[in-house]
Image (cartoon, rainbow, N blue to C red; front, side, top):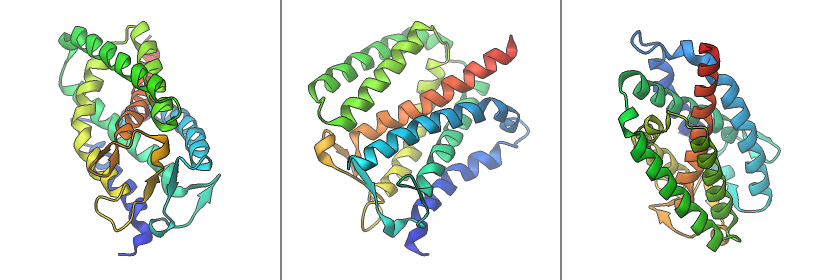
Length: 230
């Protein structure tokens, strides 16, 4: 296999099985696509702007050795696909968890957990303002959580459970991108802009970056579903 397809294959395998099982009769996630598309595109646009900024600032970079070589605004094609494939797989997982289980009884625990997380994020961000990957990511996630808590959304317990389920494939796919299984990282991070803490080869901040990406998609998905139901 040619190395240049590495990132493309990560995208492909992340979405492959969720897409196939979207048509499973007991799931039928394809019927929910109309609620997924708009939030995915809007969230993707936000992350593309963020990505372009951080790439130009040298906070992270992409290794051409593992890319097909198609770029737009300095970002490789695979990065754009990432903002489609990963949200699809994760919203699909969230939808399945929500469809077959109820976690409303965990709402109070979830609120406490969210407040603890917000406090942690704000404190760490305040202490590391110049590590931009850390401070921007942590502050954005804290603001997002504060906003959702103020709206008294009911999907946070299911989201947290889904997120923990997603962590294993997250570590595999992100491990590939950060060099756990390749000679060089597909995505390299400038440690001047992060805490320098790695989970294997994965920057600590990536978990929270991913949480923002998925939480924005799920929030938009649930908003459109609720709006349709009115």
